[in-house]
Length: 296
Image (cartoon, rainbow, N blue to C red; front, side, top):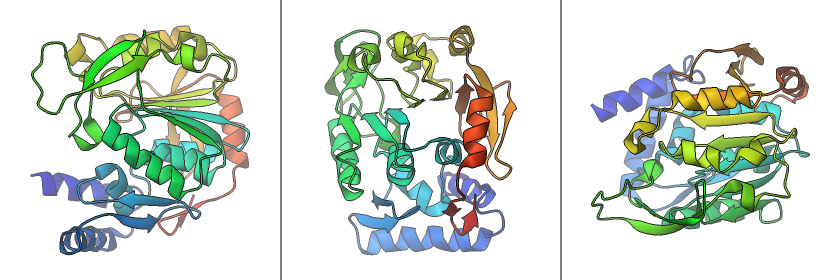
């Protein structure tokens, strides 16, 4: 079942629709090769950027198979950011969004990854792409206040805060802080949040940042996991609306933003934009980028 789901995602991906067989062959080549020669592999990604991948690491291998794993949101980062921007990656995992924003587009960045083992892999990717002078990686979690929380540590891209009282064998204790305290003197342009249902307290600890005029785009993954902590994710839409953000979808081929009424059903991301005209102008002016042999 997992194999069918993965292959369906790959062949239906917008960058693979005209090269389905090539995508399938690429998938099996990686699956066979990673078993015959286990360990880490460095693959070239976009505009000279590189990612360290290993078997089972979907955040990296998805980009090997598809070019841009979460197509619309990753393409939006590529088209909307410039070297003058500051990108904040919350729940960065191994740093794929940060690499697009900072290695490919030259923006400054902050990235937050709470799980120590994943944080090491994030640092390796940043070092591989010579980003030490432009990106500050921080090994903490984010919440609405300072404290200590338990996180899972053996779930690849889906590590998360452990609900109080839940017995988890791979739990690690991690310091958490509010983004407002950490970035009090910074003015981000774009933020990406992917924290497996813990978005509500992350946003509550980021209200000063969210109110800054510099911030024009917030990309939040919402797949219904907030309920595991007792949060209603519909309230996130209400909050963002009250802060002046509207929900949009993005077509990378047409480079066009459209008002939306929900999350991207393929990726689970919601794209919130404060000033769509400003974002559209930056998108229109961005140079074309070659991804998977396709010019975007």
